Image 1 (cartoon, rainbow, N blue to C red):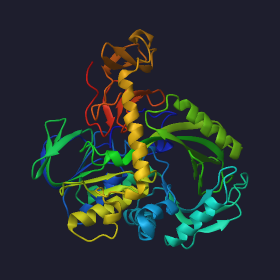
Image 2: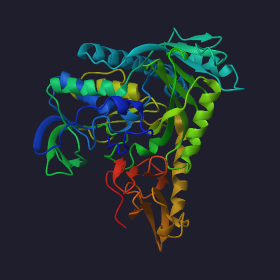
Image 3: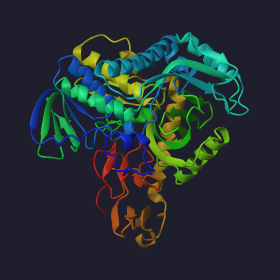
Image 4: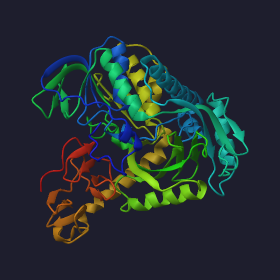
Length: 507
């Protein structure tokens, strides 16, 4: 995972405020290990934990703190209710594929519960119901179709109810998915890191993996240090090790979250989702002092393709106040990036064309369960144990029944290259106010210009080093975001999220 460059303020999730894993030192030498995992988020640490349990020597590298990437920014829904719906999964992957998808997510929730219990991790894990309801004026057939598909996928206990458990918000007919789950993601990750180290694993933070090559693989870093490994697992949310193989089969989306206090017990603790597009998702974090925290997310859009993210927060707040009138002032608001695959399921397994490199990506809004089952699946593959899920999640798969989505995403990416011939957003750097950023054209070149709060100007090339798209300023997160494949850079140009693995070039 990449470093989290956001200070602990109202733009950060509550998880980072009240639970931060203790710091690990950077790598300072040359190490030899069997497995090197790049990324200390849910996928990386679960994979490391599982492989250490198989007796493998494992080293984890992260260029930020533990969980400093997207894991800290999740809302930690643990669900078998797949965001892309079971009828769609069955259309693309067949009935057998849908059954395997349901079983894998249910198994991931079970595995989180098992690990938390075995390792004594107090992460507020709780089994809850999940309720899927329609948007206004949407037909009941949406729910009936999904109910049939869920039953076909083996989720026989999913049922159609007249309304959800919400007393103040009449959702109308809804599907109840029992035995879902929720937890505090940073408490869980902190405990998972400790448990991995008890198994003999090593974690090094503040260490940027620049690349790897050779046999055995040599993972080079931004320090005078490296790791020699037989196997490398790239668990960086977006793979940093290839340019095309996977990035044409998934697309980056920003998702937004607001959190506000509600009186304890007013909103029943459960998971809630609607079927709108963009959709909304809700959970309750039980609190203290007579209050809970209502967490409402959604309003997704393609990364780098929405200039006013504040509008998204405003829409979320308006939706939340309409349906949950007991909420108080918005205390927290944040965003995260999810990778949506064209066929609804993650890519987990051997990197196409390389038997010694494994990847985890394409969380499709279900990062906690996809990341957990990734640890189990990759451990099976590394030790040579058959897995019934390997083919379903194979990164080399060619989802021919998702061809229409593939063509649409390809056309969207191609359209972004028009930014090369457009004018700058402002005519000169002098027009960029403190705390903001804008694209400036200077002759044949486009520059990403940021003026910090003190008035100091930072100028970098606006060309993403991955595949050459022009980045765009994200005024909420104070980042430069690539509209093609989701690379993100800090305001001064330092890379914080792949697939790019280097900074924006100096102007």
